[in-house]
Image (cartoon, rainbow, N blue to C red; front, side, top):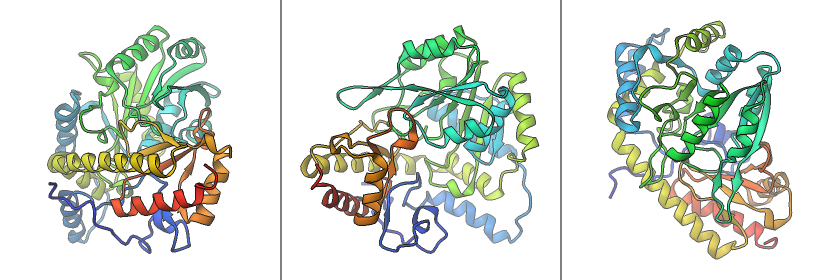
Length: 390
């Protein structure tokens, strides 16, 4: 039995929480934005409290211990060998992605994305002068998604397609890409001189029995055409502390990205975020393992519930993340209308699949990173509202 109480229900209303306070109605149950309703690991709470107790919150710099913690974590947990000079601290993965796009792309260049994919990719790409090139993933009969390598080969051959934005593990389909799949991606991108920008923010959230392979760890060396974006914020529930890293081994690419990070001031990370990262990577691995086991049990609970109460709906296998991709196409109703109906009538907030790009229509995204009692309550609300449609 875990020594961590993930069943504890925390009252987060009135705490300036985006998840809980963005909806003014007190009876809305939020199961949307990627934010967990669990206390962070005790070591993280202690580290943040120690900083707070100092009473002085000036500008900080990443100390040696910060880089040591990042290097040790990715070596031990993910088999990725990093050097200190490859690491660029930033305030978040999306600011890091924006800096990377500005550094490596010209106006009008195309960025390949495999859809349905994290909805914030699209405005980040377009607002930085690029064009998303959508490649729909292939969905099997069991709901499991796979890459369309033939389409990827064709897209990468486009001279304006400068980057592949790889989401790994994949949000929202829940895939943890295999070595074989990533090796095929690497071969295609190397053949066409396509730079791979790997968003691996969910890398620590993997179902028991599976493991995440960083794209940069495919070979004996960090690929020269790879930029990796990483953060402990999802795995350790510290998104509000705004801490992330860009990993780049190639000196030329790294210099260009670092210039953009500095120009747009997204490298000035906060002192509490730095302390939280160190505590997460150094002292919280057992908490993470317990969390992943609990999340997996939540997913099994959800699957069993749907089989009983809403058998016409189905979910994709959840290999990584805590974001479940629910197939509602049998209801014959647009995703945004189902989202609206559930919010207004069932008082539960989910994400419509449409903003996730091609292949997202007819789906909903559900955040199951909450105590089991809240998950059950949310599922009951959903079932009571949708039974008449199914």
